[in-house]
Image (cartoon, rainbow, N blue to C red; front, side, top):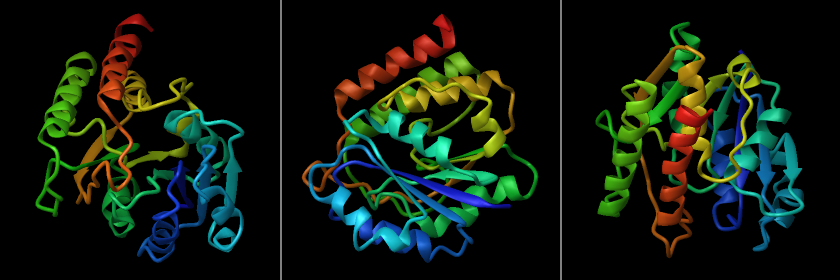
Length: 229
C-alpha cells in the first residue's frame, strides 16, 4: 500500500528539519510527504521551499493563516496514498512508531487507527495536569455522543484509508477538526482501532499552541457534529 504523510505546519522553524529527517528515516516505506504551511512568519516557509525542499514531495502554501483543520484539508486533497497519516511538525510524536500506527490497517482489521497517548506502556513526558484533565473530558464527552470507547480523541496521530477521508466533507479550520472527524467516522460505521504510542509533549515556552479557548471550541464541535448535523 502507498503511504502518504500529511504535515500541517505553522511557525515550526526549530523542528521542521528534524521531523522531516525522522519521517524520511522511518522503518515504514513512506511514499509521499506533504507539508502544508499555514502562512508561517518565522522562516519555516522559506526553509521548506529552500534547503528542505528535496526532503518533501509536495509543498502546499496557504496565503493566510487558517488553522490546523484547514491545513489538513489541503493536505488530504493533495495526498495520493492508500493510507494517509497525520504528523504534526513539532517533535511531540515519533515517526518511528508508524509501523505500530498503521499495523491494524495493513492486517486488514481497521479502516482508521488512532494513536493513543493514554494506553500502553510507552514513554510520556510529564507536563500539564489540566491538559490531561481537559483531554480526558473532551474524549469522554465525544464518546458519550458517538458511542465509541476511545481513550484519546484529541491525539494528532491518526491514520486513515484514503477512501474513508474521500467519503467525508470536513469543515473545521482549527482544532475542532478532531471532534468533527471523530463524529463523522463514527456515523460512517468504519472499523476504528486504537494503538498505544509514546508522547514527547512540549511546553508553551517550547512552542505549544493549543489553549483553553481551543478546548471550548472543541466542546462546541462535539455538540455541533453529533447533535446539530
